[in-house]
Length: 274
Image 1 (cartoon, rainbow, N blue to C red):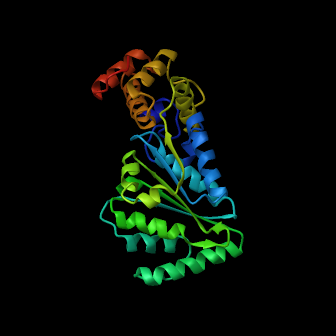
Image 2: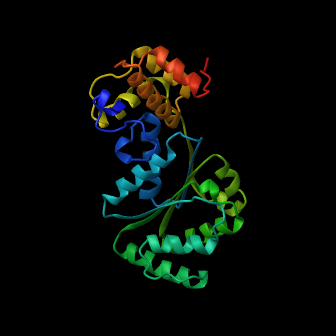
Image 3: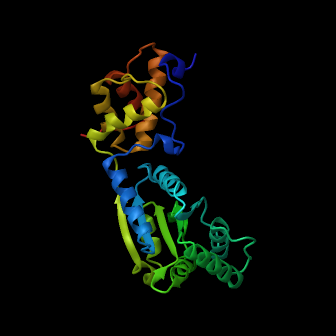
């Protein structure tokens, strides 16, 4: 038997894989989506969202993409940067391909005219081209940020043709500063915060319900302990809760209490906040 069967769950509720159906609409995450959608709808040009490790940036990026894909007014593209050794031309080609350019060239001199033609097609169709780049803190060269500035210069009369949305760790701001003219063109910038203590219980209940269980699997005291060990960081909440359910299953206790959370927190090497 697995802990899913023991707790009558259809699946594990606390996986850290970024599945948008587990998205919890906290005040912080709801406001972040509103800000990003505002920047996109008004075609501000460049928006930047930063946040600490594990605060839910990637899941929010997936939720944003899902929202845009459901509406034919948008042509969205999501890229996740997995290493820092990419070139500006590789990035341009990737953006062009994801926005629907057929057979994009390998050189900037070929890609940019192709991309401009595609953006004008979308503009004539009254559709908005949107690029979302997650883990953008992995972009480290001034050359790449100069290319973003060039893309933002692609315009129709009185109208930008492309919305660029960069999402990453706080050092993204320092990286953008490598190109001061681009830094000045940031139209929207904000920080995604961790969950408040009042959100943590509802976040946990939401994920448990999505996984198929409608009862409380944690006591009130356990919710408080989880907040203090995780500092409200969703990734840590998931890790603590997943381990707590496993521990509950091993000792055949059908509700997670404070003692279980303390044991898991200690095993994970987490120090509770004061």
